[in-house]
Length: 101
Image (cartoon, rainbow, N blue to C red; front, side):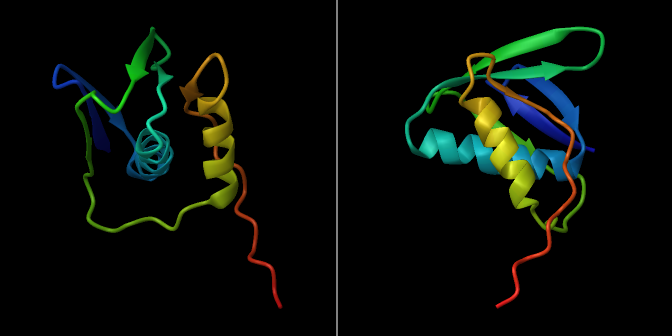
C-alpha cells in the first residue's frame, strides 16, 4: 500500500497500482494549471479535496517497481476528473493489447 498525502495534514492509503494511475492524471491536470475536486471514499466516509497547483501533494509508494500503466484506465480517470463530481477511484478496466502494425 502506498500513501497519498494532501496538504501535509491528510494521508490516505492507496494501493500502489491505483496510486500510480492517480498520480499521472493529477499531475497532468495540475501541469495545465487546472483545478478540480478529488473524491476519496473509504466505504465509511467520503472526503472531497480541492486540487490546485498550489496544494502540497505527495505520492509515497511501498514498492519500488513502476507498474505498467493501463491507458484505458487513465482515460476513464481523466474523464472523471473533468466531471462536476471530480476525480474518483473507479475500477480498472481490462488492459487492451496494443494495436499491431
